[in-house]
Image (cartoon, one colour):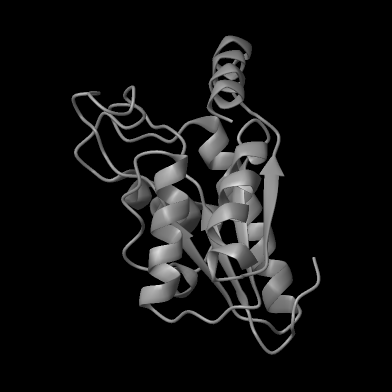
Length: 178
């Protein structure tokens, strides 16, 4: 990716799932590793880098099919995962987005960028390969020229790390949702 060297990158790590103890799934951990790689490249090239995490909580599973069955927002769990992956705390923006699904992530990200008058050369969205087509579509709508707020953005996809049956269910969900 090519960006204006004077401006940095704003990275949004999309939410995934965690278990009842707050342990992130393998996809979320892989996304954290990719964010660390993006951070390191950006800093080596002399650009600033900040990451915004996403994900709310739904302990009773009533709205999100139990993607996060804890009382702790998923964005906080992801921030801890980023720290474990070696992303410096100074690069992690607080608070994260309390989004409950991908459409919500795109809308809240746009709201956040506008509210904070964030100026970045590019928004980099990090997600899993099965979610990437929908993320490209949704963020293309939200940050498109036609929406009145054109922000260059790219989606970086990481290979799915989940068990085959879980991965198949997620791929099916994403295909239907797109």
